[in-house]
Image (cartoon, rainbow, N blue to C red):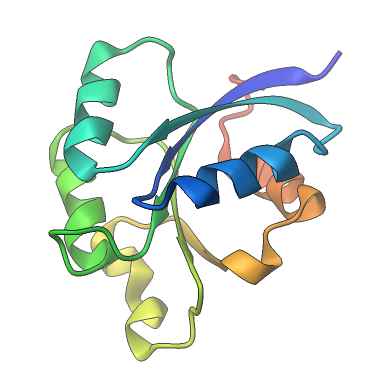
Length: 132
């Protein structure tokens, strides 16, 4: 039986949710339940509810009105979320992606690299062994 994992996607493009949901259906080693919000404020409200307990957050690099993850992820951390946070972006080649640790980001991934195998590896690597 596959372990149940709760992931929150924070992305201002609803099409990204549909794409990720389709990818997650193909992950065989975990049963992934995707939750989706479009803004950092909505993510904070979701986290405060406390149910379901999130195992991971995936954040789009650029969310309005913030500039990029250097503003959004610290906001999530300041509000008490201690679980893994991954930043997804159409391109992770900009130099500031090399300093993700400075902003509370656990990992970064290019959207073109998101596939069932990558998602399974990320869950295995970053989600607490107690949760899975």
